[in-house]
Image (cartoon, rainbow, N blue to C red; front, side, top):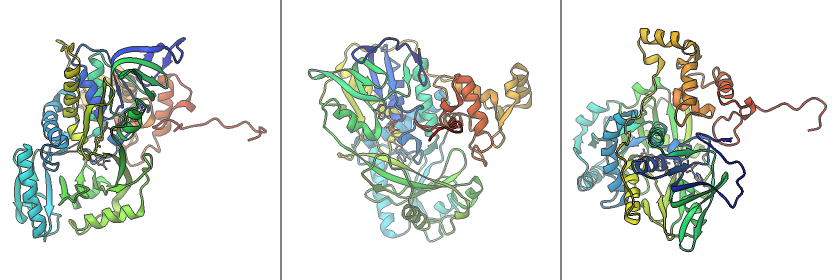
Length: 503
Ligand SMILES: Cc1cc2nc3c(=O)[nH]c(=O)nc-3n(C[C@H](O)[C@H](O)[C@H](O)COP(=O)(O)OP(=O)(O)OC[C@H]3O[C@@H](n4cnc5c(N)ncnc54)[C@H](O)[C@@H]3O)c2cc1C
């Protein structure tokens, strides 16, 4: 047996010509799009597997974005973006409790600083109403400042969209995947699709780094590389190019001098603009800018980008607390040559693309998933809904949120809950062990961090990192040198060469 990210599969004796699995559907890519699709598919009597090249889910574009569930006024009327955004937003309101999603419905403001921008807001309002967004409202200066007192006093007004919110994108993707797995689907991490296999004019499966998987249908949700993946099947119907967005994240203590919710400037043609926004965890960020580039891997931040987002934010707020910036990061939008989401069967039968899923792809994910499954239902007339689909995903207990009596009970049942590993965020060993062994559990240091918050505090893992590494090695029964920080090739420790050996 080979220990894979989230699943063990028997690969004994397979060679590259044999199939290690025979499935109805393979989903390529474990971002928010792929996991939402897997969940939607798991409502049907189908054998489905999702394959992800990284050791954990959501390490692509889903990892670094603004985390906003947009209301849906921005995208052109009738576009896939508009339709799936508005529907996706509604679905998240329903899914929040079922999946235990961390979402704060804060509402969003698009702020105008002059009369011309006020006219743009009127256009956005009209478009939003046409797109089906509920409860949009134009606010004057006073009403805007009442919501966001730190904005410049000279602003003109704002478009208020109460249905917008902020979420934890990793948690969203993880919950979609966990829901799918509890309904019989599989998730295999550390598994790269090298080629989509075809016979005549239709797909027959995928060749992966772990062997071939036979499948009637292949769903391509490979994010930035969806075009490369499609080309392996001879499908050249679209291209994807990366558009970088850079951010600055502030310490929680900076929040009171920034904003309470989600504040956009009036948008431009290429971007919704550089926003000032709170996160579900109570930090605030500014960003993103929009820089087209060739390289699909380059996520470096630049001083030019930082200056751009700082000066743009200063149009809305006088004093940015730059001394309280704690980190900079960037994400890459997967921009398609059509400018819209590509949700269609490709030039090869049985290959369905969910590609070019740039913003508002996070907001749209549950609706994109519905569309993909609808496409599948059009070509496969043998799809039967399960009668026993389990919609509720149990949420793991957070030790610090429990009452004293509950904490004592937990500690007396299992002493690991009495051992604090992350002092900054008060995370216990019991929670870390649970996060490793739960469905789609953590396999890396950052995987533990995202699931439990161990390492997210002031010391950023300086104190607990080595301890979490030891726990991962112990629980996964692997040498400490095999514990990864995040992606492939990110080992935490290496073996020292013995003295006297030549380098
Ligand atoms: C700067 C920025 C800001 C944004 N802000 C927002 C926002 O506020 N609201 C919003 O709604 N949207 C936002 N978005 C868009 C949103 O983040 C994306 O639409 C969404 O995350 C796309 O998810 P995905 O699953 O399609 O792609 P990804 O998350 O990139 O997932 C693709 C997955 O496929 C895997 N993969 C690739 N190739 C292979 C292969 N050959 N084999 C196996 N696996 C493979 C990758 O490792 C990756 O995990 C923003 C995007 C950016 C960049």
